[in-house]
Amino acid sequence: MAKTCAFKAEIRQMLDLVIHSLYSKKEIFLRELISNASDAIDRAKYLALTDTTIAPEAPEWSIRLTADAVTHTLTIEDNGIGMSAQETEEALGTIAKSGSKAFAEALKDGKETNIPELIGKFGVGFYAAFMVADGVTVETLRRGEGQSAVKWMSAGDGEYTMDEGSRTTPGTSITLHLRPDQEQFANGWTLKDLVRRYSDFIAYPIYLHEEEAEPAKDEKAAADKAAEEAKPLNTMVALWKRAKSDVKPEEYEAFYRQTLHGMGEPLKTLHIAAEGMLEYRALLFIPKSAGMEMMMPGNRHGLSLYVRNVFIGDEIEALTPPWLRFLKGVVDSSDLPLNVSREMLQDDAIIRKVRSDVTNRILKALAEMAKDKPEQYDAFTTSLGDFLKEGYHSDWENREKIVELLRFRNLKDGKYTSLKAYKEAMSEGQKAIYMLTAESLQAAQQSPCLEQLKAKGYDVLFLTTPVDQFIASEFYEYDKTPIVFADKGDLGLSDDDAKKSLDDAEKTLRPLLDAVAKQLEATVKEVRLSTRLTESPCCLVQDPSALNPTMRRMMEAMGQTVPEEKRILELNPNHALIKTLAEETNEGKRNDTVELLYGQACLAEGSLPADPAKFNRLVAELMARA
Ligand code: ADP
Image (cartoon, rainbow, N blue to C red):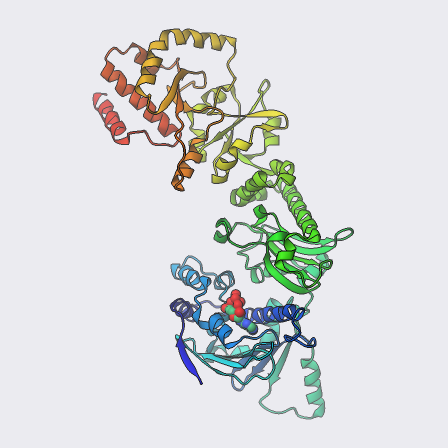
């Protein structure tokens, strides 16, 4: 009994957009359907390893295209896993795929106009068929015992029909009733060209059969046609199995985009053929930037795994350490058994070796990039540097290599700098590496805590990304040189003379320090004089062990309760304002100035004064007086 159902709303909306988009490269529908067919065969082949009812003997796994220029139809058929009625309904109609809504939104926004990339990214490939067809019929029979054939039809207009099917062999055929202006897709030459261009590395033979309007002239012509049609259109050798010298850059890029759903061009491609103790092949890509999905913790990630040409699975997390989750690619090992399961992979010795080898090669590639192509490496740091920093935090095995790859913006010229380069350029007599955490490069550059360092001509490295805040406390030494944070503790820069003059100043300013401490008791734990400042009247600093203020704000923003930790207010004894303040006899006026000073110190490090309204009022009054 046929039943007609409505598509899920998101799917309808997405279909509408796909059909009516003005996107000119409608041909990509073919690559999507062939890739689905190939996936279906991968699955069948894999399941057949453990379940003989799936495939009692190995058939010739293949994909067949049938083009009919008379009826203007194109059929893509595979002998893969097939679908049960429920699976068909779930896959092609009712279950709102997480992707379709996001896809529709991205398209509607108009910001993303690259439909093929979007289709790949959101996993809605099947629906691309409706760009060229005004009717799609799916005939499918699930492999395995006790399955019945299913027929699914839709004109892409909001509804689909499900009925009993007529297929007698397991697999799926998808017939497209081509739109009048898309009839070229029933043309043999067009199809051959498209398969070579988009689907050449599909591991199963893709055959083409053309229905002719008239029968062959004679037997010879018929035999020639049959022989021609028995030749697969694709070369089938997986890209990673080919010699590096045989693969063109555009082939790598096509693979990256079409198979791995990468966006744009990759930043770096690694084609690995490991031999010797550990044998495996891999095709790895460092993307130019991480997708949104990468940023969300808990999302699956990881490389795809093949064992001797059989697809085992994608998003195999065991193949890379978590911090390398931006990496895309394929690993093919001949040393693993075919029937490995995801669970087994987790503690498989070979997988562990591959993982460590892959990690080493990526680290090496990054080190080379940093050396030979510094601009490219800067781009990597900007978009993916935080992943590396996460690696520094979590991957102890590789920490020494990773630390050399880290880059921080510096005070001198705002450029990315390595710890090594910093150390090599240190001024004579400079005993420590100076760092500062801040919310942005601009905030860092303007921090009053840097004044003394600037006066000395010392450079400072800035930690300004969210991950920086988490790992800042892990920087305490590099290559036997201590790392000191510019806003924490004593910078240890004052010579004996400076210390003496500070002691002298302390004697005269003691009453002021006590008065300020009393006034700000609630927010500040200590008020002291310091040599950290040369231009500003005051700044806020912390104990060396304290949580940095940016980190604190981040944690609070995430809804965590962070124990209150009072700061230290440092005053510059040489500043005219401090001197006048010490002589101020009107207590009310002095209190207001202290309040203003404290507010300024807060603003300088990126936080708000304790009472912003009062701070504003005081500033206004001050202006009125001036
Ligand atoms: P994706 O392939 O990214 O999941 P699609 O929209 O292309 O998204 O396909 C949706 C689902 O339909 C697939 O995940 C698969 O379960 C099913 N499907 C599509 N084509 C086939 C096929 N030829 N054989 C078996 N299942 C298929």
